[in-house]
Amino acid sequence: MQGKPLKLIIHAADAPSLARARSNAANFMAAAPDAQVEIVINADAVAAAIDSPHATDTYLRVCANTLANKQISAPETLTRVPAAVVHVAERQRDGWAYMRA
Image (cartoon, rainbow, N blue to C red; front, side, top):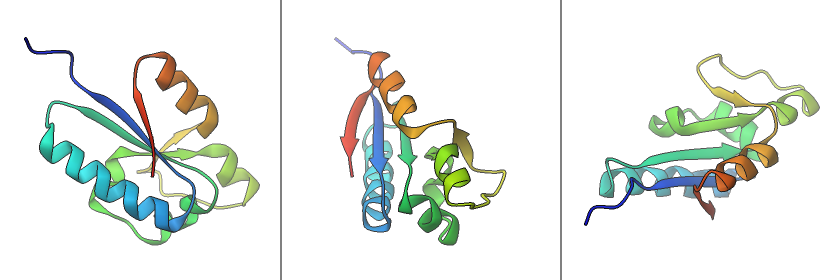
């Protein structure tokens, strides 16, 4: 029996974890093409993502609080969420699996 499509949220808070999250997301989607994945970034991962665009950036969810607190501008192509912590909690409430990169 086929279950519901997988939904995974990967959290990254610094440059090394962003690199792992990008790799994990790419591997996850290659193995489960019907799945959904989001990489939620905050803290130092935000500047790292802006400085180093990547093919997985369509999966990024950028913390608007971090942008404001660090006075960083992000390209309009990156999807923003008001607060990373709230977005992660909402996704988990909605049945998404959580992974810390």
